[in-house]
Image (cartoon, rainbow, N blue to C red; front, side):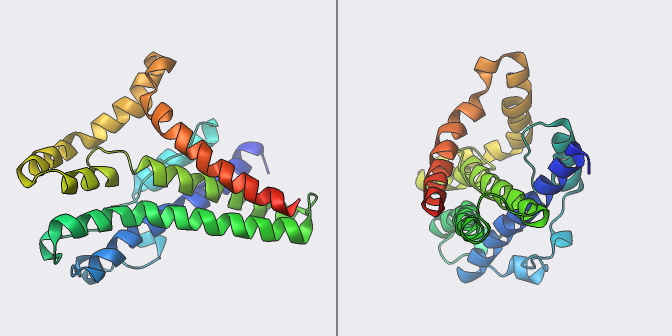
Length: 226
């Protein structure tokens, strides 16, 4: 197996699982607070096919993996009708936080699984266990990055919904309108500005420190297993 294919195999599957759980968590919490939209549309399933965005879930991550670049992606957003939530402003914040919260939970469980592998197989596992170990490491990294990235306080990211809920209603509605510029803004911040100048890589500078801090906690936990 070539190095590029191996890298793609150990990054894309963890990415798909992470973003599917992220999106389904939004729908689960929305249903708890009164909105059944995601369930009615069959989007509370963990079947990746129901959530795959051809570009964001397959083409872009595969291209980034083969190019050796940092991998990110997205799934089709789970539909949430906040008008059906019992307390739309407050409950929408919980719905938004459910996605990153799920990613952080998955990352924590993954570090536990990595610790179990380390305790069971030591530093020199076989090929199959090494492949599983690589997937788990990447799964932890992806979940932490997705969790932190989605907390950016800009619409349409989950952090943007939290800011919208914290603002006075009239100001929150105006802030939410920024979501229409979300995708081009994301491309500008993540792709264009870093190409123009490394110093303009605003997003990595924002999410890098908390990602490194959280992964550092996981690494210290693994050190307990030798």
